[in-house]
Image 1 (tube, rainbow, N blue to C red):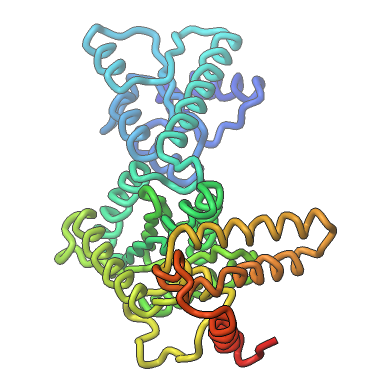
Image 2 (cartoon, rainbow, N blue to C red):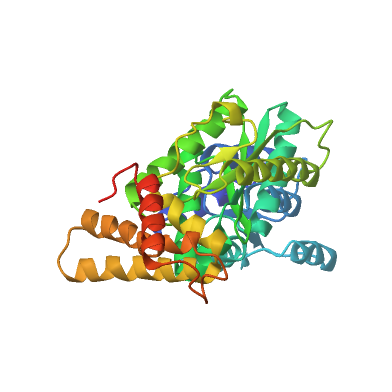
Length: 399
């Protein structure tokens, strides 16, 4: 509450307390009000328009709205036309005319609080991605611009992480958009588990995500990437799904001289992410992606040469051979899991059965286009060939 007449101020404070409100501060000047707002973070400011000092009530209200998003209700007994015009220009949440009754004061405050809550709800909805609950592009740009300005003034460090999901189109095409939506929600969960509450997380659109970390605890870029990889791996292990989460990640340390605008920072992180995605495609050829990857993590010479398990390699290999075969195999695997659950199998056994179902079309990998229509070899030869292929994929066990 801001009122420069001491007797009136005490009387209004007593009335507010009797009405059930908690007065976090009762001050005389605009500068004192700003300090009190910073310290107590109230839900609403009740201010006289004509307070004395460096800031009048209208100037104070404008700063409170801009800096703290605080709703303001003006107290006034009279004002000239120019003062009313200035007051209306900042769109206050209400006016209470002196003298007033307790009932009129309560009505003015409650109306202002309801309007502010509705505005905040609409703002959240307009800045939030409905599927993941993260900020959308609009929300991210607004918050990130503000945070980078504060970081520049305070000489703080910042780091931007740009992430893009791998294999999203294949999941949507073969398992359906519900599975794709689940993958997007898991990506958002991975970011929440990796970053702090104070960091700004967003889904920019499609399968692109971004995180802005201010003062990232002095962590190096590769440590942050490793944390994200570990989080993604754990989510994949816990879910036991056949459409594992995978991200290509680009990380960029913010430098105001190199990145004068947020768009410059986004552009460099995006370029690094694209390099990571190209590397991912080269390194993961022939197997489904199962973990997050960034361009500077896990160089090719350090990767294991052991072949991927058949339950992972088979769907990817079928997809490369023929998209229709891959889609059929995924459907069979999905319905196998559904039937297993319906028959009372444990969830673990249902997942195992679903993985095994991918092998039903394994022989299609060695059938040429011509063989698909004309049998150019004997049944015995084809059986022997397929048996050897299955033995190599299963580690030598021909049973």
